[in-house]
Length: 279
Image 1 (cartoon, rainbow, N blue to C red):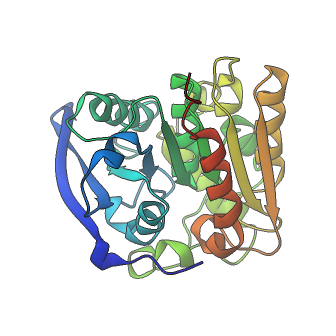
Image 2: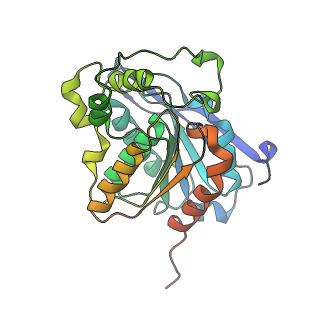
């Protein structure tokens, strides 16, 4: 795949899409420079950053956003309120606010062709948004069965990673394989340590027949255990929603396996966001 041409792309940063509880909500736009009638016909992607719901921001996403722009999409990358100060469903609510704002905005794109895309916690939020809106969703290493993960790791003390997260690119984080202590820590951040919220925050319990198609990817031996996306796929299947699960060899997490997943992901997006046939 050719490298995205940054010179042919415009980035508009820190666009306000609202506020929540006094917190300003901002997003970045990525789009091709050339304006014209084709802009009205392009699809849009809401690209959601990861970070375990408790860290990270939209500034991590330029490489993947540029790849999506090169594929012809308008890309919106929102920030959202983070845990543990803001527990579930704050992050999901903010992503949905960004989606509604995008539909009502002056940006030029086909309102009938929108999808969500995210990795790690962003993958969770992508599927949550797809379930809520009926739009297609792509998740790389999303975390879904929060209650099940905590129950399965009850003999493990929740601990933050020893990696220097602030000094690392998103694609380099958690490349060392399973880490139950950090996985448990991450999940408990999203509910502020309140285990009574875990069932409500578990995406596997939110599957509905009105959801759009879902693309799931996960490494075979990474931070997120394979049983988690498998459980999400089973929940979708049980309500009749089509999904694809790509299992990638190795220990890479989310954007760490971009070279292995981007081709099939773009093919999925091209299929589910194809223009409607002319009457």
